[in-house]
Image (tube, rainbow, N blue to C red):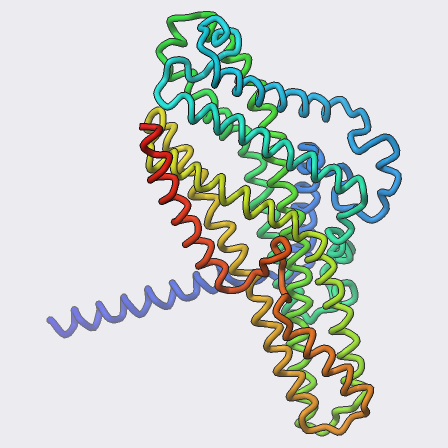
Length: 440
């Protein structure tokens, strides 16, 4: 009987593991169909419409012919744009006035959501700073777009007519991976941008509805609700501007990543031809020209986006640290509000870390490309011009500054994820030791 039970138990385990493995294969499988192509592009167009609605950029994915945009300034007297700018500046000024204010009447008319509440001053300070920083970032992005600085973001639009070899010039495996990455990034960002207004409504109405003074002073309740609608409107647009532009960047950079990975597959193919003794010098020359072309395209994108990525890493990491500090360590206002802030912070930091981990892989792949070039030219006898071009590429690929740049002094590597986490832990420790006692 015991043997039968053990046998049945073993069969159940085998069946369970088999089905679990099959389920995992379904989850990580990359779809391959024309229907999925249309589904991806429907999602891309929907996300692009969201970026235009939320005024992320004015031209969506079409960033190639916008020289006439700057004729009357980048704002171009658009009513919705002026409303966003004015409400953002007014609310930032409002929070600053509330920080220094000691008059109850002024607090009533400005709708102080934290009237006589615990941790009022640090929350008002952070609200004013957050709005000012996000508004400045949005204006900078619009200014750069008006000057035509974002043409590199439209490079992946070559697949508008379909994800195929003719448009993308990659092998089938890398085309599928690139298409799925576009689908995944677009799915995440479109849903997050849609949920932002709901989340902000909960975040800003919570202090008003849980403040007992709101129910005792009708004037405070009325103006608090009115001002809350204005600040939710402003932050919805400026926060979605940051998120939406992040979508543009995270769709453009994988295009370069997978084109460089395709070079590795092409090098393996040439090595296979070497074994078959069908290898020619023309193959090497064509391969070198392709490497130079794709490296030039990638380095141009990395150069033009380096300061934008620096702002993303700095601002998002600082925001994540502050939200975790206020929500987890200080536990500001009440438990529900503190949990909301902690959720934002915990959501932000891993995303930036994973971004560095994924795109830091470029450096490793470029090192592999150097090894393959060496193997390709080791056994053959080629002309001086061909070998000089190969040596030039190998020196260029093995340079210390290849990869996605964050500012002028940092290049993403695989170690970025670890360094980023350690740096944020040390920042949280500094906040706890130096600012924590002041808040308490």
